[in-house]
Amino acid sequence: MSAIPIRKGRQLDYMRRAGEIAAEVLKLTAKEIRPGVTTGEVDEAAAQFIAERGCVSAFLGYRGFPGYTCISMNEEVVHGIGGERVIQYGDIVKLDVGIIKDGWVGDNAKTIPVGAMEPEVERLLFATEESLQAAIDQARDGVRLAQLCGAVEKCIDTFSFTVVKEFVGHGVGKNLHEEPQVPNHWDKSSMGKGPRLRAGMILAIEPMVNAGGPDVRVLDDQWTVETADRSLSAHFEHTVLITDDQPEILTARERTVPNLTLAKSVMA
Picture (cartoon, rainbow, N blue to C red):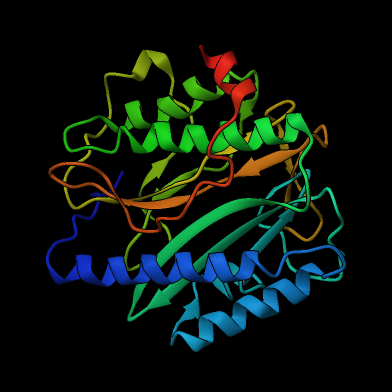
């Protein structure tokens, strides 16, 4: 593993601004998601929001990716490409927005329900957000990265869902993907090993959680990832700064499913 970047001073100001804009674009673009709209139209709306803020997409052209955002539907996990697919009532849409402002990257994602959710869908979204928060709670100076990563799977296990292991979170800063990789699981035998988090590190933490099995496959477009058993999948992401005190969420927003009586009873 290469050295994990430590950001200081003005660099943190740039990252805070990039995170703020990424969160704003995500919020505005999410409002465009409704029945009858195509995923391509949502992507075009995001492109406009990004340009209006003097930014560029962190995804467009990255290793050849053709979209401004990643838009993944239902059984699709991540890296979906906006196109002609029409959003329907009852869908869940994973929207991942990354922007570059003044050379610094903000990256965040959320899962948006289209209309009312079935109880099991609501529970999936709640569990995924809960696991993201569990990881963020471990994003502290001196804590091992393994402990943060393991917190996601530990949380998801209580709901009997599964985490995707082939795709991971990552460091973020001047580049979209930096060290370290941030898996959503960790081998228990290695829990006391690996790097420790330090103030100034910035992580894009992003649980990807399946309602069914953990296996996934990449579609013929060479980008879109879907669950192998075509079960539903949820995805949430925040850019988080490690500080000398509490973790700082640079892409702060309200939770999609803030409370869930059934889910809480399962965790009790």
